[in-house]
Image 1: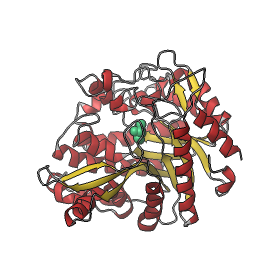
Image 2 (image 1 turned 180 degrees about the horizontal axis):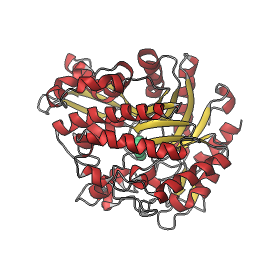
Image 3 (image 1 turned 45 degrees about the vertical axis):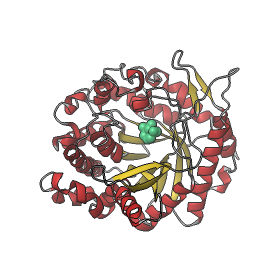
Image 4 (image 1 turned 60 degrees about the vertical axis):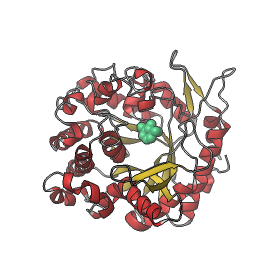
Length: 440
Ligand code: IFM
């Protein structure tokens, strides 16, 4: 790695991130069915129809996983608390689920790891999906109740709480593009989910504040977007895509408004009186989590339905996902978000990482591509810090190879290899490289 801990400001946190459904093993501990179980069981939705029922069995092996995190010299662990584990029907607390997160947080603290919790990383209880999921405003209030229950149990020990992970994926990717659960391609459903997920964030913030919680924020994903050519059409399409993907959520949360370019398509499908929710959605947060992976080149496509755009990956090297590796986009977002939206508020890079077709040979995984990827994105983060952005931490996605949603177990993002037959963990060469860098 071309960096060392000493290059970063005092107190900068290095960590790794995971999410409950992707690693825990959802069959254990009395968790209830989620809309991802339903989606995975539908034809053609997920590679090989795989689901999160076993995943990495982190539910039983969390001590080993946290030991690996600690042995790497990490400061913090970003994890999520599954709503369907804590409340299997979305409404009724499950003591076993609460006990699990109690043990998990204590195990982090015993190892000197700061717990960075995410309340919602996509596993909506199926019972609430049955009632319309994120299209139904009631789901936002139920989410507030879940926030209360889990916070009353572990809120005294967590370092930071993010309400929602990647609302764009929850709303647009899942309700308009149909790639994630519930797999809809429905603009009215999407408009409602785009608003309700923000409202759920606002309600959760209110509940957290009423319990005196500090260090509360949200995690948004951003995609570096550039026009494919110098035409007016490509510029217009890029602005629309940027509004839907990159501006909708941050502007709602920090300014209490939605961008006009996105409202052009969504306005007539929005829930009644949505404007009345904007003050609650835009109440102050304490930090912003930034998830960044890649860049897209965008142009206009008059034959496509609104938003009338076509996009493709940029020309650079690609990961196993086919995503272009473009570290400059991270620097650009960190600077833009600070300049245009959050000023000096702490920003964490809450996800950044790459999938590669890693294999274990003679007990080791050689992944120089990932080492380079991490190193280059750390340099991009350092450049943003040098430009005055208050970045306070970096979480690699992901600690473990895991359930990559519609791609099943095919794509490997981990710094630790998981054999999904035996569940054996093998730290990859990039794990050892990162460990050496942050020890220096
Ligand atoms: O695995 C996902 C994660 O759940 C959310 N952010 C992107 C990752 C890689 O696709």
